[in-house]
Length: 113
Length: 114
Picture 1 (tube, rainbow over the protein chains, first blue to last red):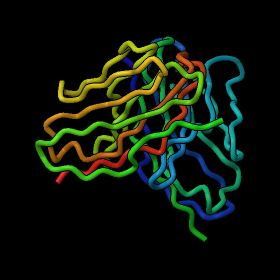
Picture 2 (spheres, rainbow over the protein chains, first blue to last red; picture 1 turned 45 degrees about the vertical axis):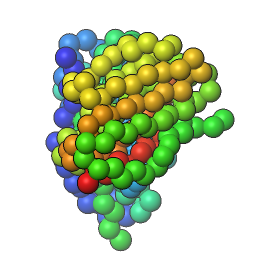
Picture 3 (tube, rainbow over the protein chains, first blue to last red; picture 1 turned 90 degrees about the horizontal axis):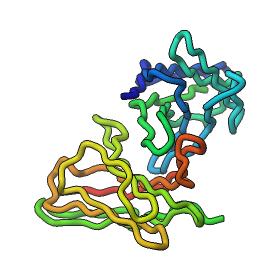
Picture 4 (cartoon, rainbow over the protein chains, first blue to last red; picture 1 turned 180 degrees about the vertical axis):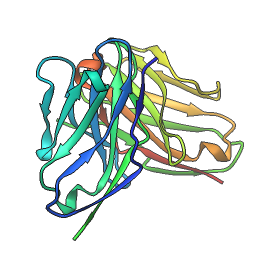
């Protein structure tokens, strides 16, 4: 069965600094990978997804993620963080079509001025 | 295009009662999935309905049940509520090819059991 680990529970980044959120997955075949963001009291919004092709994926709000098969990782990056990026970020993995997405425990991002 | 609508947004119930939550997916989406979100356990998959049939089920007790109607709207029911059922319940809809397109989530129903 697939699983997802987000090693960092909480990260604080200065506004304007770069950001990298880590995600490691466990799955035997090529997984379907997603990053979602959740603002307080809200549902989750899809930032980007990967299932084949170019290993560097561009998403909304200036985010990108890189799939590295050799490291079983799908880290999320942003070159310059804005205060509005403060939220909780979830990495998710899916197996073959028709199965549920499994989510990591999330990383809370705080942005300091 | 309207998003995923969950009602009600907030609920307070007493232990032992039952509760029904509702979810209206995006028009044209035939799959509805339900997740329970708590600070300790994170997002845990409850079940998925596709074309009125339960397609996947998570590891929750039988007190948690759901159904889907012919218009793709879905309800989940929790019977004999326990304090530990307090959580944010999220509904997510997709075309049915979840692994290709991911989910679109609703804003959730915050259930508090007292």
